[in-house]
Image 1 (cartoon, rainbow, N blue to C red):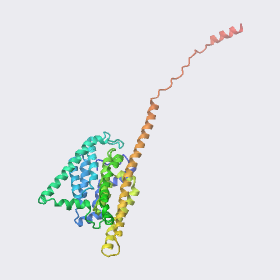
Image 2: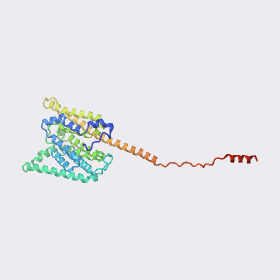
Image 3: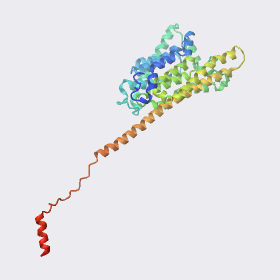
Image 4: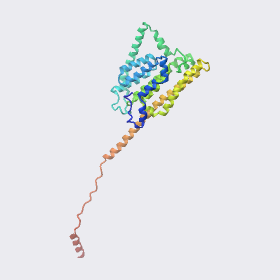
Amino acid sequence: AKRHAISAKEHSEEGGAMDILGPSAAAAGYLLNPFVIGGCLAMSWQNLHCLSLVACVAFASCGRGGPSAGCAAVSLYLAPVAPLALIIPAGVLSYHCRGGGPADVEDDQVSVPMSKALPTVIRYVGLAATGFGVLIGASYLQMGRSWEFIETSFVDVVMLADLTPNVGGFWYVFCLIFKRFRLLFLFVFHAHVIIYVIPIHCRLGRFGRLGPLAACVAAIGQVHLFRAYPTGCDVACLLALLLVLPTYVVQCQQKFILLACVCMIGLGLCPTMAHAWLVWNAGNANFLFLGHLVHHVAGGHLLVTWLGAGLQLRRRRKWTKLMEKWVWGMVDEACRRPEAPAVQHSEQPPATAEAEGGRALKKRR
């Protein structure tokens, strides 16, 4: 993230916020989040999944595709299906940071065609698939050459066999749908996360030095929002990662603060609503689902607003550079225009006093 940070000298109007935000603020925002502290006290394994996702982007931002693909395989092993949205953006980021990106990395209007990055992305996908296969093989040997762990660790997660209430919304929807529509809803809920990868790459991920990193952060946000079994650590990781690019946050700072507060308040309602429903018997499932809707809609709106700020910032810089180019072009043209030659007036010798006297005598005669 430090490699991709824009200095405050380049954007003096954003200097105050740029000094506060950044990688340190992102780390503090995650480690000091009360939901993360509660997850650590509960000995939750969710922090390991967040670590694998962040390590995947960190290695890719250093141009190290192999370790990044290994971390992507670990995240896919811990939480099936959803981390697939991160593989392509991380491959593109590793291609850019390894020297395959635009020569002028300071220009966020320069883009790289996907055809140039495609071999690196294919190699990255192959490494991630190999790492995932190695983890599956190690689990097969650890379980005494038995494949029973596949059903409990992957199939049940994909098919949503456990509908215990949680802070997500999958359990509520799949408790209400008819069985004949179950496969359709499973496909839609799992596949729509991957669909967003290509539009984000085309609009933002292929431009300049910040675009690929922003696409990776957006992919992690999608993973956290649309997981089958989310926890409070997912929302904390989403809010912390958005602080890695401070220029985007400054662009939408008012909406960012409002939506982040609403998201945390909605997540804080979930334990209260669950206790009122399951312990006091003073409510129903709609109470808990209301808390999910509040923080999920606020988190989704926050991610969309953050991406919109990135698009607006790139568009503003684009028009600024076009205007600068147009103005300086006019100045150069005016400086190169040749000056009009001065009119040469014929100089007549001044008449002497003798010549004037001779003319006067001629007139008298």
